[in-house]
Length: 90
View 1: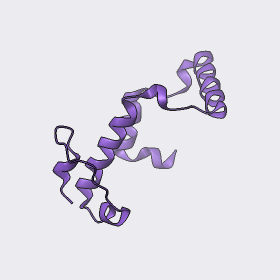
View 2: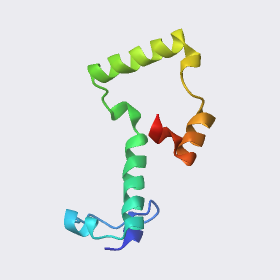
View 3: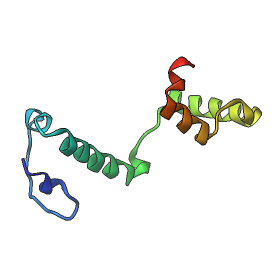
View 4: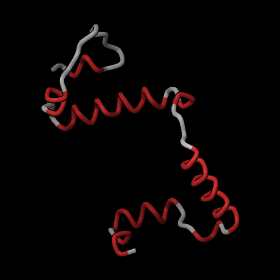
């Protein structure tokens, strides 16, 4: 399978690829394919339906944050904990 076929600037026609072929791609090509698929989904956010349960969870988390914004971690703290592995012991 030619990954150039998946680049946004290349038109490859109506090719069909089996899951076996896709899973047989080298990891970097599979990652690129996933990125392209994700970008195509992100390009139309209005098409992604959010379930009522997820909406309720997001609203509850936002309310909790607004009531106590100091309770969480800053993005810098999160990145630091990921890099040094300290999040594993939390």
